Amino acid sequence: MGVFLGVLNQFRERMIPPMQLTDLQCKKLKPKNREYKKADGRGLFMLIKPNGSKLWRYKYRIERKEKLYSIGMYPEYSLAEARNIHQSLHKMVTEGIDPIAYNKNKKQKELQEKGQTFSMITYQWLAKHKQEVKHQTYETKKSRIEKYILPSLGNIPIRELSSQDILSMIKKIEQRGTFEISKRAKQHCSQILRYALACGLVERDYTVDIKDALVKHKIKHQPALIKPEDVKDFLDAFQRNDARLHKQTRLALEMLMLTFVRPVEMAEAKWEEFNLNENKWVIPPERMKMGEEHIVPLSKQAIRILHELKELNGNREHLFINQRDPKRPMSRDTFSNAIRLLGFQGRHTGHGFRAMAETLIQEQLEYDFSVVDRQLAHKPKGSLGATYNRAQFLEKRTLMMQDWADYIDRLKF
Image (cartoon, rainbow, N blue to C red; front, side, top):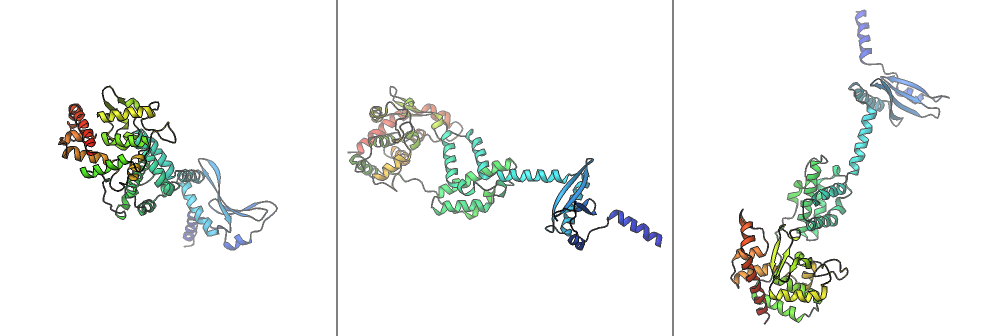
């Protein structure tokens, strides 16, 4: 029996090395003239310095190299805590993992991830997105993101971003009553997060979680004058000019009414796009919403306005210039601001001239919807629509644009 117990004890000693230190010993260890060690087993020891410091160290071998891991200082790390940490480290070593290299890589990764803020990832996505969309679309998105999203989310590390962070940002926008902006902000966040997901930086698109917490706002179409009597009232106010609009603004507003292009397309129009001999305006693809070249037949009234503009801005790149910086085009907001000054705020906008023309040309001038729709540069429906509309309707559209200009003149009297 005694022999059996002896063998059993030897086996236990091999499997579980004896713990040589106790809490009392750790407390009573005194400094000496030179530093010395007190082992606890399996490479764990306490290093006692001449100045009285007591440091936990773990000595191990990996890839035939001896290394020393600093656990921490006693009594900040008690004997039990040091042993727990040592146990984890020793397990890593037995699995062939170097604790020092592992922790170094871990810290570098954490620092890298902390540096990868939402703002940093956003600008990476914007750089990619810039190559995929038109310049104006890119600038609009970038401006919206920088104004509404980054002030709230920009400094948050991308891995720490939560659905609640996004919800809080969007709720701030909703509180201003700008529901269309809040909708766009959510879309932009979703695009950025899907990019981050593809890069392995987040686990999913967190905007999906907040859908039911957002205000379901009905889209309101921009107001427009679509009754002949209302348009006549507007033309009366325009001719009186009680608001004392600048001549360039008046010409721009009248040109927009005659051509019913989008406000930005008119505000940024360049002289090189106009052929006054053929009475047409060719807007290049990069300035069009649908990315296709668009021809605008010019009425006699529109040609007259262009000659007036030649006297004002003929030596400039753009038809309509920014008053503060003549090298830049006029702002698209000029149209709606002018309409407001004329007393039609809430009833009409710069974009409203499109709805005005679409309605009255069909109802009063009895042109077919397809002809009007093509002149509005809407995306043609159907696989053959684009080819057919682009080729066939130019002659009809030329007649229509002159009829439209003449109809406006009749409403003035």
